[in-house]
Image 1 (cartoon, rainbow, N blue to C red):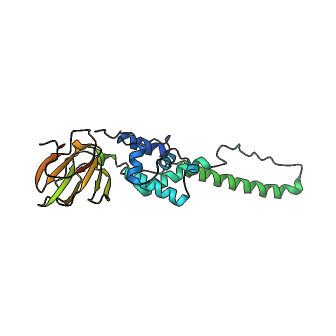
Image 2: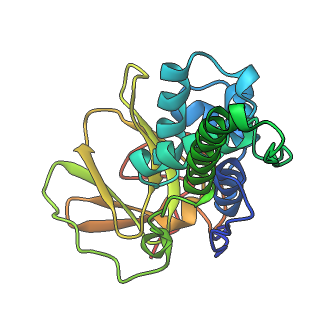
Image 3: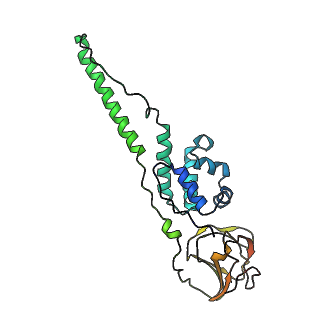
Length: 247
């Protein structure tokens, strides 16, 4: 299975780039994320490139950013703050403007007070823009949750008769549908995470890495859903899976 790239968040990278690096670290394409999040590929690409002109109104835009980030296991609220900070910084009109240099008009004593007042106003405005630019340029701290995607001792699931249990031994994207085809789960499962459903319910599953997902019937381990690194689509859960790797 493709392992996530251990890339530190660098301040020279804008937030869209950090999203793209994290997605590619899990071996996911924009098409995969579009299916998982129900957000169009064009919108996801625009988020990664900070192309605001290609995105809808701000309310929908920030909702897309939050959903995209959560699908990759990131904190949605912090992701929105980081995205807003980066997009606002690129929109500042005065960031690279030349400094205004004021000279005192000693030959105009009658206007001295007025000129001093105007200078004071410009100084205050300049100081205000300076503090705003500095605040926006300072990266908002992000929570690095990559540790939960590394290999760990699998947690013991609670097994019961009459239930199928899916359990991951490494991070993997999993989608589970009921017998009518309705999606019940579609996201990345972390190491040791489990899902349970009735054995007679006719659930089907699609996974990114079949070798990282074990299937249990009650307390009995049937095996993995396939070989390591092998993707599986619309596999009906049963006690006799033809593609299962037996223990």
